Image (tube, rainbow, N blue to C red; front, side, top):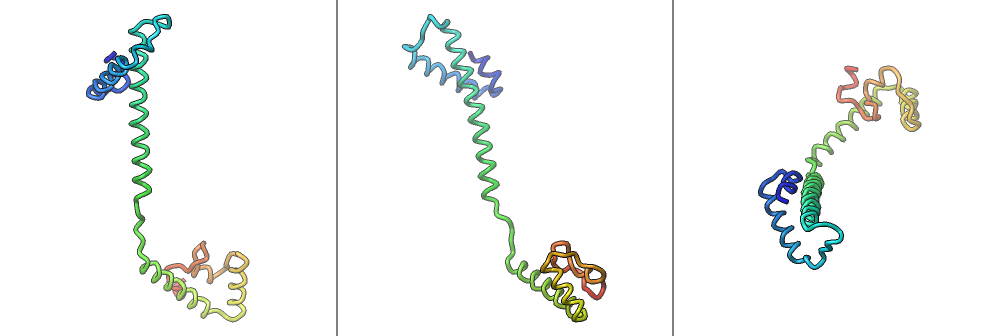
Length: 141
């Protein structure tokens, strides 16, 4: 019986623990043994194999659960002040870019942004694909 359990678990200490549990279970449930369904050895080996497989599944579920909890408890580092400063700088860069355009160019850009159109020419240097300003100054683009 220990050999069957050890083949499933591969850990000698856990195998011995499971074998002990199986023997206690067999002692408690001996009245359920039906010799017409098979021999006592087969009954014990079936219980041992099932208990060993349960232990493996339980260990896997526990590891999966710990991984999920660990990922859930991880807090992303987020600096609200840095995000606010970066957003303000991006907005200022957009204002500078728009301020350097003629009224007609500015209206075209604003209409294009509202409609989701792509920007053309030198104005494109001021924008990232997400319609935010780039990190470079518009004057250098």
